[in-house]
Length: 450
Image (cartoon, rainbow, N blue to C red):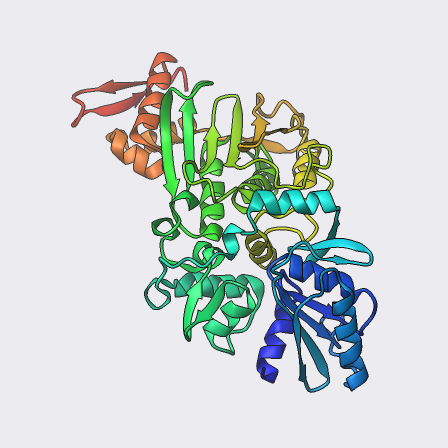
C-alpha cells in the first residue's frame, strides 16, 4: 500500500468491505464475524469513523490480541495482518464455514454497516442466497480493456468526489467492483452495471422498461422507452420519462418560476432507486417497470423483500440484497446510509398533500403505486399556470400551423401514437381542426374555444 492509496481509501470512506476503528476493542469481534459472513473486508485500526488518522502503537501484544479475538469466534476466523506506518490493517477473508458467531451474536455486513442477525435469519438467508450474491459475482463476459466505460467512470468520480490520482484499476478494486485473476482485471456484476458500455449486452435484465398507457389498463400504449444504460444513467432517464408524462404546475413569484410535479420528485426518485438497487438480478425474465396510467403510476421490480427482512419490519429496517450496488449508490449520494428511502417517500407525499403510496410485495415482485388525483385543487395566493401536453400542442401549431404529427412528436418528446391521441381529443373538444391534405394541410385553432 502507498500513502496515495491510503488517502483514496480514507476519502472514499467506510463501505461494504472497509471499516475504520480508532483502536482495538472487544467490538472488533463483531466486525470480524460480519466480514467473514459476507464477502470479506478490511479493518483499519488507527483511523477514526470520520477518516482522521490517529495511529496506534504497533506491538506484538496488539497482534496477539487480534489473533485471540479471531480464534475465539465460532468457528475461528481466518485473517491476515499488515502494517502501514502506524496503521494496522486486518484483512478478513470471506468465510468458508458460515455462519460465524462472536460472543455477542451473529453479524453481517449491510452496506457500510454491521448488522446483528439471529441464527435462524442467517441460516435462512444463506440458504435462499445460496452463499452467492449477484453483484459480487465476476462477470466473465466483460472484457475490461474493451468494455470499460471511461465516461461513466468519470461521472461517478465527479459525483463521489474521489480524485483520480491512482490507477483506475486500483480505484475500482477499492470500490469492490474489480478483482485481479492471473494479473488480469475483471469486473464483477456490480462493476458491469455501473461501469461497462451497454450493460444489457452482459446483463440483459438490467434495463428499465417505461410505458405510458391510455386509460386505466395495459391496452393502448401511447409511449414506451427501454432504458439500457448504466444504473445511474437509467435512474436519471427514468425520472425524465416520468416528468415528461406527469402534469406540472408552474408557480410564478416575481421573476422566479417554480415547477411542481403532481407526484413529488423525491418520492418518484426514491422508488426508482429502490427498484434498481434491491431487485433480484438472478431473475432474468423480467425488468424493472415504470408504468403511467390515467389514475396511477406503478414502479415495480422483480424480487420481493430480501431475506431476512419481514413484512412487519418493512420501512423500519434496511437489508441490501445487492450490497455493493447499494454502497456505490450511497457513495454517489443517491441513497442514505441507513435505508430511509421508504420514509422519504411517505413524508414527501404527506407534505405535498398526495394520497399515501401503496406498497405491495410477495416472493416474486415489489411494487410501489402512486395515486394520481385531479390536480391543483389546493388554493394558492401566487399566480399559477399549467401547461399540459395538449396546451403544448396548441402553442406549437399556433406558431407553425403546418406541423405534422411526426414533427409534433419529435418536438414534445412523445410517440406519434401519443400525439394522435391528444389531437383526436382536441378535435372532439372542438378546439382544433385540420384543413387540407394530410401532408400539405394545416391546423386551425377555433378561436372561440381557445
